[in-house]
Length: 221
Image (cartoon, rainbow, N blue to C red):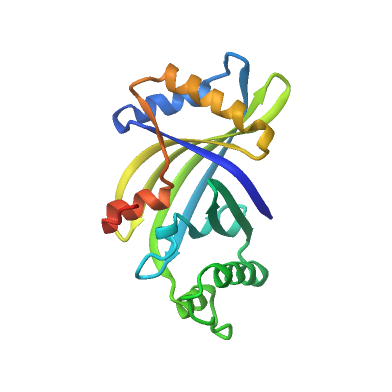
């Protein structure tokens, strides 16, 4: 599936992380917004890039995700500030979609050797290797404005485990999947920032971006 979404991230200060995350999990409403559901997920993500970080330099990524319900492959491209994200089950079709998108956007990558026996080797054949791995404990909640579902809230506790171990980090991610709802979710973010002033702050970095910044000293321009 192709997802055009607007994604906003709010960092939670580590010393306040557990308490603040629990407060958000238990929050029922905030002015005209209310929150429902509490789905728990355990996730492990592997990010691939070239030795020169050609994806990271454009704030893009390719991610292999494992969770209880299956394995997924995601390629994310940012265009004009909007995320174009393709997610598919990690199978031959998903691999083919990801390779085609990479070929269209990165001419410097090599031709894939499709006869290799596993997916990681095929990515290695075009010049991509695992550069980062992250484990996540996530709780997802639906965001409603009156009776209208306008987005999703994700409360994450995550830790980097490859090539080095560091963390945990605490993060709140809010997503809206329709342009008509973007402004409403932005308004909600302002309410959260005000309610938790001094504990949270907006961030433009993905987990991948933050991880390679810390691990490899990669700095975005």
